[in-house]
Image (tube, rainbow, N blue to C red):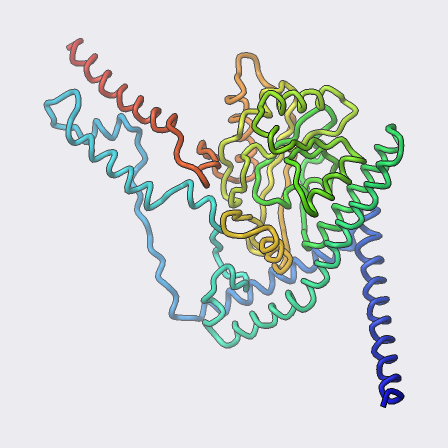
Length: 444
């Protein structure tokens, strides 16, 4: 019996060996080697154009379906200031100071905030104008028609049967090479050779990881790329923002020390390049953080620091309040705007809903990650400008360039309550209305 099974086992082993050889050869020729030299065959661009055609076909199918939900048009109140609205409601009132009608302003604004909360909706997936054949976008869409369901089913087979295994292989290859090669580079003495090898290793590994997401990135205004001795600040949508930027230039990363696989990667990276890792107990020490950042940027031989001042991920529709810490150092700031195209896959990480593994699975099973990156001209703190004003100016420039909404709210509201300072601002505005009314009455 064993003699009959032996040829069959040998055939299986031979087929597996051939499959592995072909797979590795394709991986080496079309992905790893181009990543080393920073070139592309244009396959991902062609793939993106094919997807756009596919989405147009699916949208055409949807246009012939009669049982869509009706679009509800919303008529919004004309935006007016607090003082203008209260004066409008007080029209005809004899009481110049506090009036009972003032309560209605705050009640209406409270209801509006609940109905159209401009903060909470920044932490949910961005709405799409048309379906992109992913059930995570709209679970009910693939049941609308038989043809559309067949199209969706083919997409599932392609994404999970071919793209996902390829991307997982590339991800392990990129991370594995990053750990091994940075550890080897760390053995070299400090100097130009070590810095050169470190830059090449980081760029190669990040580019492999970019291919693991089938990321198609368009970089604009590369002449404004961050330089040594400065800080690069960008809006934050996803953990892959780091890979998006680091595949086009080298940066010193800032973050908290982690354990597990992330800890292994951090310890390997810091051997080759002076990244800035903080212990959990050091993160809240603002003076210590500021000193280490200042010491780093003071040495112009060191790479620019990459920081995301929002401190949390926002859903690719807006830029929220920048923490002032990185703007207090007094060095040149290089703003960068990142904008993802949600048609191909939602890059936003809702950390309160998905863990890192689940999020990465979503990324690797999406069609692709398509985004644009704009390097803005360097900015410096102006005379008489404090850190908060400087941060807001940089934030406004990033929002304007990326076509994002510029919001003053703190991204920390995702997990916390509204700060008392925001409540006090509204109280001060109302008190000015009352004081102004009293002053007008005394003059008359």
